[in-house]
Image (cartoon, rainbow, N blue to C red):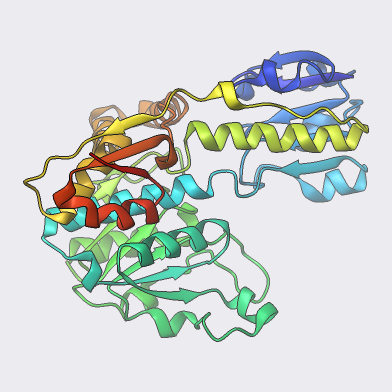
Length: 380
């Protein structure tokens, strides 16, 4: 079996070399001739998977080692009988950690007490459910909005969109859709923003098109809402740097970029390829991760400042924010490619379970919070 695999994926050799002959490629340079005699294709989201790429090829398996599927022409794949799978949920915990880090960063900047704030989680799937769990662990009031889930379950905990618009903070975790009963493109539009107040805050770490960027820019400029954190942008990689200037935190679509998420994605695709090919070859990933790191926060800080100290050790979100803002100084025709390079070269952070927070006896009461958001803890 010939397996064409994007060489930007971590541990691609270890994951696929025992399954067949590997043919590595650069994701944005893949061309149809490269795949003529390939049996399987493993890609990232940078590679459009369609008739142009696969027409005339021998490919019968396509695995997208990512949570998204927007880059694949599913109608074409289905017509041609080409098996397709993705790594749905692989980066869910990573994105939830990003949201939590953003919340603490903004809270300390603005002297908020997060346990006194309400959070509306819009979209309660792989990511949103984890965001909700972490928010509850730090004492926030959590409102859930997911109309499709309500239709399936009838569970009243999933409230209509209109019912959660009064929350202090709204965070969005839906797919980007244009059709169906609940389209999400421009879900946050002028009409919705006009119903919000000056003390409300927005987070988008899902898809850029869920927000009407122009409407958001106007609202932030006129101070009709308190602020926003954006990891995703309309028109990526050609983003609106005027909007970036007005955000509290802006990052280059890297909320889900962790070593754990990438390893999960590769492992999930490998498992699917094994099943598709009738092989039973489990992969041991224990050696893929560095040793557990230890974090010892200062004793003199408030509880929120202590938490932010720990979070900054695990993930410096302000560094990513600063790196994106530097692109605003570039000529317009360089910004798009620079955004892509910034995203591609982003350091793959480790997720919270790879850290042990060392607490003194006087701060041991914070252990429940840290374990609730995913860290290991030890009292010293």
